[in-house]
Length: 400
Image (cartoon, rainbow, N blue to C red; front, side):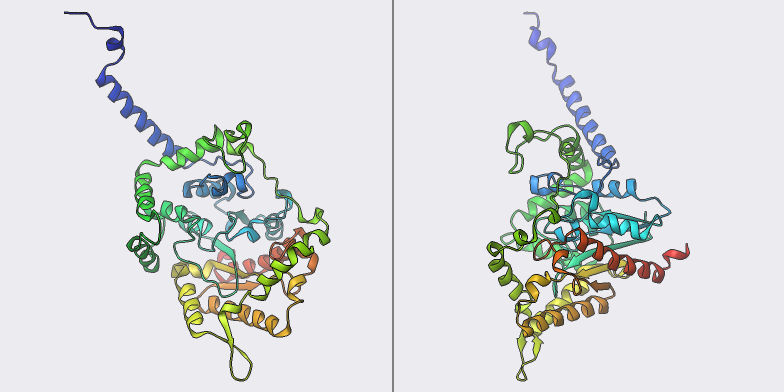
């Protein structure tokens, strides 16, 4: 009988399997541990290098840990969601509008900006706030919306991974409209590409928590592949927390350049048709909502948020820059204002707080057709702060 070779002595199947299982369990435990750890010190907002724009997909555990690290139990939690307008595109990180909102509200509140570019009001920030509803019962969620736009209860295609993350981990409240929307997606896989694979992945992750471990690893150790923003080999594999938030400042760009002729034609076309799909003129020449659009809007508003969360939800309706708006014919401006009034009424009737902004803003308060400069952000913060204080009073937050 030949003696065992060196390779045989080094490789024993039983030892290999035990090591594999122990290694796997260690990764599972690591995922659960880091999922309750804040790995974004001095967090202000999600900039492109820590979002799905660069294939980094934040988890609900990650967002929840940011909330825990930045809000004390004795503070009223204010979670900011919505899209790039509320994220603060065109406002440098040290002067983003949510910092001024925090200053206006004071230490009684903790303002946390979890907005993402292109996100719905019902995307990741909303799910993070909902997941923390018991841990932080005194909370207000706010997001921006366009006139007569509802929001799907399962979020947008781009950020739906955060809905799956929260949903399959059992972090959300029971909500029939949301369950129905998910069932509709699952019933039409030919329309919603990869929907079954995505839900299966989320179910497995609910048990194993590998996405929390992956995002922690990507943020703190190294990323594993290049992206459009980091194509160079010298930056492709850097941990994402190594990249600073370098959002440019609109106010350092001359007004004439921001609103130059090369942008004007396309922006004016968007402004001209901002609310066109919702209205027709009646026999008297007055604007009238299309009946199907009106019904669809009210359905969307009614089903966007669970009933128990509606009283503490603030929806903020955005206007286009006055630079473009005042160039529109009077009847189109009237149509847009009518759309804003219908939008405010719809959200309020469904049980939400809702305000608008931009009517008395100056040209210089906008960096482009939609995004605000620092000065515009400060005006927005003042309006929002007043409404948050009013909501806090109505909700009984100030008497505790």
